Image (cartoon, rainbow, N blue to C red; front, top):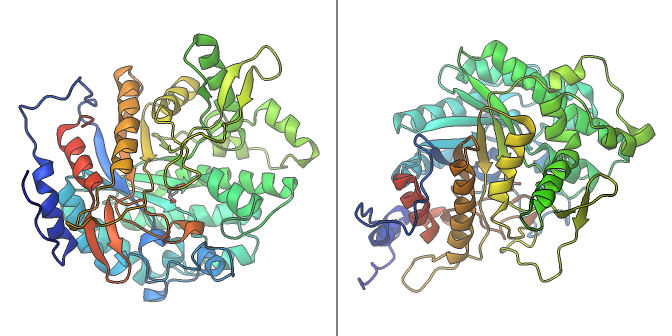
Amino acid sequence: MTKPAPPTRRGFLAAAAIAPLIVSDAAAQSPSDLSLPKGFRWGTATSAYQIEGAVTADGRGPSIWDTFCREPGKIRDGSNGDVSADHYHRYKEDVALMKALGAQTYRFSIAWPRVFPGGRGTLNPAGLAFYDRLVDELLAQGIEPWATLYHWDLPQALQDKGGWERRDTALDFADYAGAVADKLGDRVKHFFTLNEMASFIEHGYGIGIFAPGLKLPLDRLALARHHAVLAHGLGVQAIRARGRAGTKVGPAENLTVALPAFEIPSHIQAAETATRELNAPYLTVMMEGRYTDAYLKELGADAPKFPDGDLKIIASPVDYVGINVYIPGPYVLSSEAGPGYQVLKLPKSYPHMASTWLTLAPEVLYWAPRHVARLWKPSEIYISENGASSKDKFSKDGQIYDLDRVMYLRNCLTHLQRATSEGVPVRGYFLWSLLDNFEWADGYATRFGLIHVDFATQRRTLKLSAAFYKEVMARNVVA
Ligand code: FCB
């Protein structure tokens, strides 16, 4: 065995020590053909508040996460995104790392409070200019920019007026989306509207563990859900109206994915039926233009009231469906009774990754796109996020051997490959995440990066998983 190089000061160089593991040996065959389809796009994903820092730079206004982080007890380690990975100042180094990995695409988010510090009204050119620089740098390195318009950092000024409970927030979002398309649409050809509506609404307005930390009664919660999907639809229309011809747009939703307890036709059917119902307020209404009968029945008098025409806007045709896929929804059995499925509880001993919420079921990467394809027949599906936390530690040789992350990714990709080999139209995959970052209510305690960030020195170090992913991307095969 070659003796690993001693750790060097710069993470990028330290990565060179992993290089012997990155041999692209064309002669070496994988045990079986786990190739992804030709033209499959590989990349990584991040979001603005989680990596940028620089929260007061160039006229950025406060977001609900700036406020939330300052409330005692809300963030596990009492931290915030003030500095984080300082990507705002180090974006060139980070793009160089993407390039070194061989990534073809990059999914990042634009901070609404940089563009409109007050949420609406006067645009802040200095804030938008950061994304100009980032996009130019990506394109210069041959990396395709995929921009998410909303990854949870609502301008605080809009929350002060009622946030997602207020219909006008959806209209403000559309204005903001249009302004971004005007400015970046000559270079950004792919947009995601809102990231994980089911997360930021249920966690932020339902159970209060995310910003803005509210626990709304069901009628107000159902209305907030409605405004989020309305914002998505209006955002799609704004991108169509103000982006350049050929610009593509879709959501990045974390649908709840029901899994068959085991694979026999009746349980598989039950899982599909359950998936449609469990996403009734989000992806189902976006794809079908109506709330399911069961959802409306469950809400009863708490069902949202809205103008005619909203459902048509919500279901504005999209170019692709982005799905963030990490964990299993419920495992189900088929059932003669009720909705056609029986939901099973996970036993206490069910395994999870470093984050306790990250229960392990790699087959969700097969079932999620398969259910979406069968239920709604989109022409293209992208895995807009998938990844794992790990308790990363430096070894004596200066490397991070994050074998649990590699195991998770390899198994997830194997199941994704199973889907594509059956013709499910998944066209690309964005690994969460490029860098360790501010993981919302978990603060910095939870690391998701392929690249380790020392938050005290901002030193970047590639982990073993980066070497793994480099290999996958280079060969277009599960390695
Ligand atoms: C997703 C979020 C993303 C990150 C990962 C771990 O739900 O979209 O910002 O927190 O989980």
